[in-house]
Structures are given as structure tokens and as C-alpha cells.
Length: 367
Image (cartoon, rainbow, N blue to C red; front, top):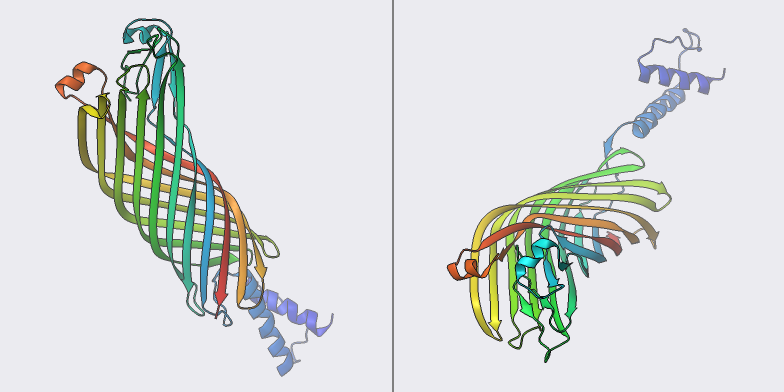
């Protein structure tokens, strides 16, 4: 056994805490060069096999900028239904299953996100600021034949009854739903590297969220063009926890996971209008309440780095992500004309969900 192999055995024995006799003779002392080589073996082993913060003496400070577009669908947990009765009669006919029920419960749209980040020189810590905006809308309708009855959206229980008269046929009963959300986030975190191929990035910050849901229904089945409108807005802010993970699968190619959880506190404002005649509101109601709204987000994707120089890196990425806001809307509706006349209105809180694919572009500048 040569002396280099013997030194490797000594290094392994020391690291494992084993009492292994050296193949080198006990009376034979190590040279200065051999002692230096042994120290390098120990340092290299510890570097490759111990968890560490991402710190390198050659790390320059970094500024990162990221932008991505989203192609998404949005929905709420509260149904948005309306009906067409298959025969003449009162709205009670719906209890017998004689109504064709339509629902606007799936909306599509787009969104975008912009993020700026900074990491100091020779430091695992980083800071970030992020803005995110999402919008989705949907529409559905039913065409009534002469003598067929239809209902406006009432958001809860039974709809209003409208008859399509011969002079107006065919008549449309339709409605639309839109969802809007924007989110501001600022915070700081740390990069931690358990292995050479895995980087974990926990963070802590503050987020501000605004959410709006609008529902509009119109009935062409009567000359007065009756309509119903309801909307809800939430505006709140609170602390946010984030966690990211990146796994290198090939040179410049990595798989990424990004999650966030925030608990926000703010006000929900709800409005309801019922127009029996054009531009003349029959009923107008509004309400507000303060509430807690949890905001959850998750994204998975793949990214590829293009190194233009030691100072500039371009990043291409794509994936799938979701946003879930719990109890962020409160739609006011009425179950009958009697309740409207008496002013007894019901509000129903609902969750908002966004989900879809994204494509992004980023850059890192080191100086």
C-alpha cells in the first residue's frame, strides 16, 4: 500500500472516530507535505458532506429581476346559478326539477407577477419585493322561447320569474362573473444548502391583498330589462411565511418549488342592487365586516440558466401554480321578494381559487 492510500485510510479513520492502526510504521513520522495533504483530505470531506449556508468567498452581491405571465382559471366556492323553466308557472316549479339550471362557476383569464431581489456580498441572506395581479371572468346564457319562463340570478334559493312574451321572443337570460386579485409582498430570507444539489430558502415577510368578485345578471325576457348586480371586495394585510426549494437535475437545469402562507386581516364590503326597471334600482343594500382571511399559494416548475458572463445570467422558467383565498368574498342575495321588501338579506362568505400555467423570464446581475 502506498503512502497516499495510507493517508486516505488515516483521514477516514479520524472522521469516523475509528481506532485503526496506520499501515505506516509507528516509528516512521509524516513529512510536512504529507501532513498538508492529510489536512486537505479532511477539509475536502467536510466541505462535501456537511450541511452549510450558501457562502462562498468569491460570491459577489446580486440583483435579480423576474417577470412572468399566467394563463389561469378562477372560481368561487359559492355557486352562481340561474334557471329557465321548461313550462309556464311560478318559481316553485323548480322544486320539481323542471328547471334547466345553468351555472357560471368557471372563469378564465390572465395575470402577471414582477419580483425584485437583492443578496449582499458573501452572504446567504436575501431580500425581495413582489407584485402579483390576477384577473378572470366568465359568461353564460340561456335563450328563452315564446311563453317560456326564466329567472334572474338571485344568488340564493329561488330566482325571479320572468316570461318571454311573443313580441320579445327569443329572449336571453344571462349573467357574468369576474374575479380580480392583486397582492403586494416584501420580505427577507436565507439560502441553506444541505447538499450540493439542493437549496432550501425559507423567508418571512408582510403581504397586502385586495380581492374583488362581481356578479351581474340581465333578463331580456321583459321590456323593462330587469337586472341584478352584486359585488364584494376585500382589502387586508398580514404576516407571510414562505418556503422555496431548488433541486439541480443537470447543468444549469433545476426543478423548483415555491410556497407561501399568510394570515391577513381586513374589511369585506358587499353591495347588492336589484333593478326592476332600467336604471331604477328596486332594492339597494350594502354591508361591511372585518374578518381574517388566510391566503395560500404554491408553484412548481422547471428553470434553465444561460450564463452570458460571470456577471450576467438569464433564466427561463415555466410551471403551474395556484392561489387560494379563504373566505375572501361575501355575496349578498335574497331568497324571495318578501325578504327584499322586509329588508331581510343574507350574506354568504365564499373562497376564491386561481390556478393555471405560467411562463417567466429572469436575470441575475453580479457585481
